[in-house]
Length: 219
Picture 1 (tube, rainbow, N blue to C red):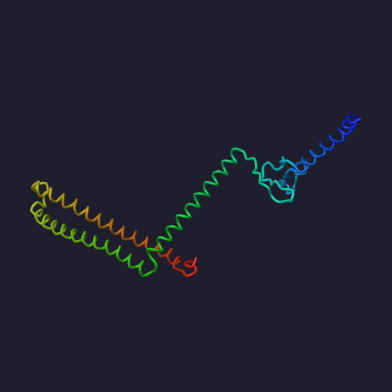
Picture 2: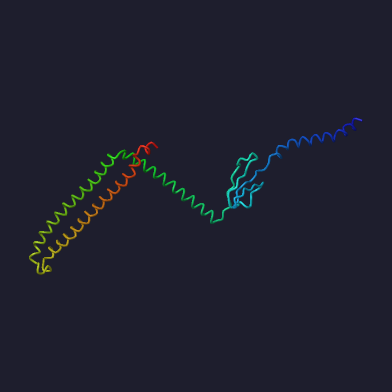
C-alpha cells in the first residue's frame, strides 16, 4: 500500500519540479530583445527586432524596452566612404591641433605684451638695432667711396687707356667695386629686414588689440 502511494504521488512531484524550473527561467524569457529603429532614405521611421536592411547605409539605434537608446549601430561604409570619413576625421584633428596651438601662441603673446606701451617699446628697440647696423654699414660705405675717389684720381693718368694702368692699381679698383657692391647689397637687406620687423609688429598689434579688449580678456 505504501509503495503504491509513493508511486501515485511521483507524477505530482515531477510536475511541481518542472513548474519550479519554469518559474526560475521565466524572468530570462521575459527579457525582450532590443528593437532597432532608423529613418530610411525616404524619411520613413522603421522599427524591427533585428538590424534593418534598408538602413545599412545610415545609423541605426538599438532601443531598450523602455524606448531609450541601448547603442548606436554605425552604417556599413564602402572602402571609399570609409577612406573619406577617415580623411575628414584627420583634417578635423589637424584643425583642432592648429586651434590649440593658436590659443597657446595668443596666451604667450599676451603675456609678453600685456599692453600697447610694451609692444611699441619692443618695436622701437628692434628697429633701433637695425638702424644702428645700417648706420654702421653706411659709414663703411662712405669710407669705401673715399678710397675709391683716391683710386679714381690715380686712374686719371691712364684715362686714355686704362689697360696701361699698373696691375696693382687695377686690382685695387676691382676690389673696391666688389666691396662697394657688397656693402650696398647688405644695406638693402637690412632695409628689407626693417620692413619685415615693422610688418610683424603691425600684424601682432592687430591681434593684440583683440586680446586686449576687456570682453576677450575676461574669457
